[in-house]
Length: 102
Image 1 (cartoon, rainbow, N blue to C red):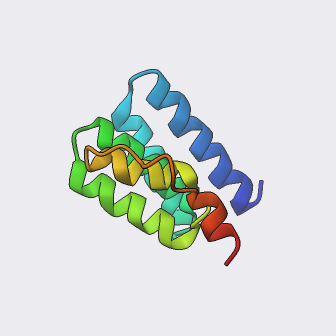
Image 2 (image 1 turned 90 degrees about the vertical axis):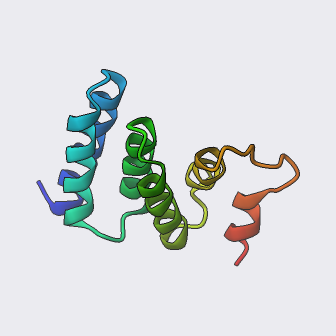
Image 3 (image 1 turned 180 degrees about the vertical axis):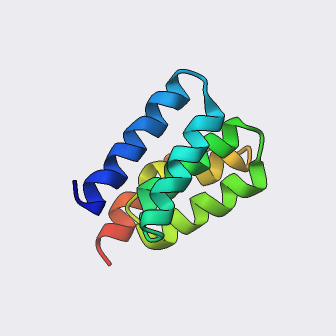
C-alpha cells in the first residue's frame, strides 16, 4: 500500500469513527493522515469537522482555513468556515466556481 492509499484508508477510518460517534479515534486517524501529507486539504477538512464536533472551534477554524489555502475548490471546507463562525454561507457566492477559474 503506497502512502496515498494509506492516507485515504486513514481518512475513511476517520469518517467511520466520526459516524460512530468516536470523535477521539476520528481525530487520531485524521491527524495520522495529516502527518503523512501535511498538504492534504481533505484530511484537514475532516479533522476540522471532528474538532468542531468536539467543541474545539478555534482549532476547527485553523484546519478549515488551511484546507482552503491548500485546495480552494473544497466547497465543504469553505462552508465549514462559515459554520464554525456561526454564519450561513451566502447562497449568492459560488466559491467553487470562483476558485476553480483561477
